[in-house]
Image (cartoon, rainbow, N blue to C red):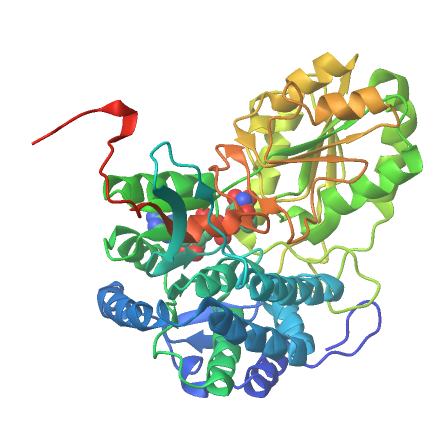
Length: 512
Ligand code: NAD
């Protein structure tokens, strides 16, 4: 098939089949199954994937428990070796897996490859971490005593993921969980089962090269919400890491809490940027463009609200509207494309509904219309939208998972920060300024209330070295770098008496 750019592509289903084969995915897992896999590029069905029944979850968890019981006794640096080998497989197959991400999630080529690079990065990080699972030693108040804390593997970790980062989110969790001595069970998004199958195949190759890993160390459970729910409710799975909408997190968080499990929730964002009078407007414009339009607005960290000081509003916003009007929208496989498709019709309808609501409230809308409907009737491409508003009305406080940027005009920084924090979500944020006082205020205790607060870069596109996650309705979880690994282990405090006395803490006496 030929795209508008005149580039000839293989038919999507053919390319998907070729990639799955080259990645070593067993054909029986994607032929003749009950779940249709679809490409948002054309809307066509590319494969029929075999699903797990919710009733099969219990058996998978039993295998996972057995794998855990063996894996937890393997020295952590040796566990790191398996993750190193996984990183090698990902390096060797980066092109094919990145391409499959493009075909299944609709990301442009460089973002598909970037997602696999992020997997490689977290594997490298986890390998180093496997020699650094440090606990503290603590001064004891009692003579002849020593205190310390030790970190132990916790058990099977359930990983539920969203469509928009179909492979990276698994690796953020799995690379850490595995070096920490846990087994993992993965319930990917029902919208992206093929990339999950491909990752599982690469993991199996790493296991074969490693030699001696327990069977069922990382298992894949393809299915819908009911499969996720069965995992969520299983008391043998002490940690559930769930990435997706706040709606899903509210259900999963409550169910896990009911059985005293631990959840790591990575939910919706409603990310803003504040533009100050001293901002470098060229840099600001580029920062906004990537954060707001990139991935067609389908990142949890996508920029959704722009809070602009009145002194630069009339310079910045028309320039931004111009960039929006000319950005290249098209087949994500074409080198010149910056904006690929929305994931499905539902995403498109959600976007149009939000725009209608904003228009009815007096919003001035630039863009937002469907494009390429003739070229791809079952696919949903849109021009990203800017909506100028006089107030932060209700629709702005909801996350619409599409490229809509609401723009608000403000006076000073206190007003900007107040507006910034006045939404239920708290994932990512940024400020554009050359004023040190403004920048420091934004990242201080009285500034942004988000888990991520940036200066002079947009809110999206995090590196793996930092802890990733957000506050309020974003769920409070932290994944990836820094000390996020602690959520995948249990902490024991040990007090050791090496004396011949038995003094009690706090001077308590109990002489029998
Ligand atoms: P979604 O909530 O529809 O689905 C996410 C996953 O949850 C899927 O695997 C789904 O099958 C599963 N699920 C749904 N209901 C469930 C239930 N009751 N029990 C167990 N599992 C259930 O989200 P989506 O549309 O795939 O992804 C988009 C959303 O994800 C956006 O809100 C986005 O902000 C969010 N997201 C957040 C982060 C983050 O790190 N904070 C990262 C990526 C995406």
